Amino acid sequence: MNRNPPLSSANGEQDRARTPAAVTSGNISDEIRDGEASVNGGDGSGYSSFSPSDPNELLLRQGPRHAPLTPLRIVRGLACLLVLLSTAFFMLIFLAPFCCVLVRIFSRHHSRELVAFFFGHWLAMWPFLFENINETRVVFSGDRVPGGERAIVICNHRTEVDWMYIWNLALRKGRIGHVKYVVKNSVRDLPVFGWALYVMEFLLIERKWEVDEPLMERYLSSFKDARDPLWLILFPEGTDYTEQKKLAGQELAEKKGLRKLNHVLMPKTKGFQSCVKNLGSSLDAVYDLTIGYKNRCPLFIDNLFGIDPSEVHIHIRRIPVEQIPSDANGCSSWLYKAYERKDELLSSFIKKGYFSPGGSIEDKLPTSKSLVNFTGVAAFTLVLGYLVASCLWMKLYIGLSCLYFAIVSHFGWRSA
Image 1: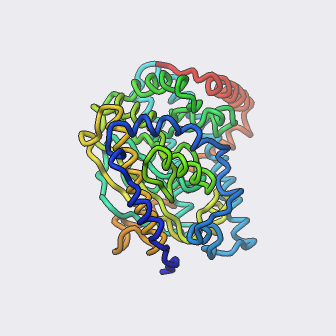
Image 2: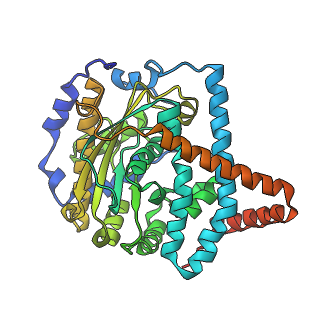
Image 3: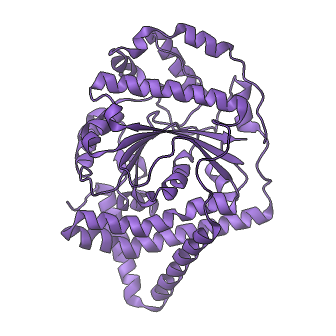
């Protein structure tokens, strides 16, 4: 196993020395909220303009690649992308109107079950690409979470593909069709992608609290039925990690007397508070995930062609929902403490190359089962493609379905 060079602990000791008692006080929520918009703003461009002062952070950008970019990997990656996009398109156009319109008129619960069944099979193709085709090793550590729980999932945001690797855990827990993300509203008008977010009921936000607060309350109120399985996934940092955003957060933390964070950004608290407040009684737990990559933080194209990462490490902490403070100040303080813990975990990961020794607490994905799923979804798409090519009425149906989803996803219209 490759090991990253040791990281000096001097900065960490200085930060601990500065950590005031105010971090655990009720005032922390006000301190965080005052500056969270300015700290975690930006264009979400990831690592495109990055000049890290920490040599270990530099290693995560310029370390050895998992595999070279060969013509074979390019052809294989493009073929996989073609399959994934075509299957997504045909499943959306043909199945979503039935699941999201006709069935939902009679039962919202059964509508969601059908969407989870069909589109869960499609989402399961991504872990197959990551683990079985690209041979990226996914290592889970920490708490082993049971299947069948309703949970809020919080995670650090290192790069643009963090959200995809949560599917690897959700698939193992039988929840891949029930994941819901909180994402920026700007993606809603993208063809196919924006339609998929609408069908799978992702929460699209403006990132303006005066607009998002009532929107979140309406959205969350529709998920209070304990019969509806749910993994609601939040990235409280609000954007992916860059050196500039880290420095801005550290400057604000110093002004507020808070502990400075080195490997994560200051978390936004209001959205998490709203989720706990509105869903608390119907949830089982909060899952606190921390993601680290070896040897480089990947971009989407790295995942597609299988050149990075070599390993993805996901540390899991399961917190029963009863242990999360229900008041706003206590909830904010709890979340900031969670991010201090993440910062320490990532510091250790950079030194050692793992969160916990002893290998993964979860089994590897069985290749045979993943291949059967992949083949089944691809074959279903070929059948639908043949029907479209041979029938004028099917072409008309596709046109009307595309028009419908373009309109309803743009305006956010949904049956009760």
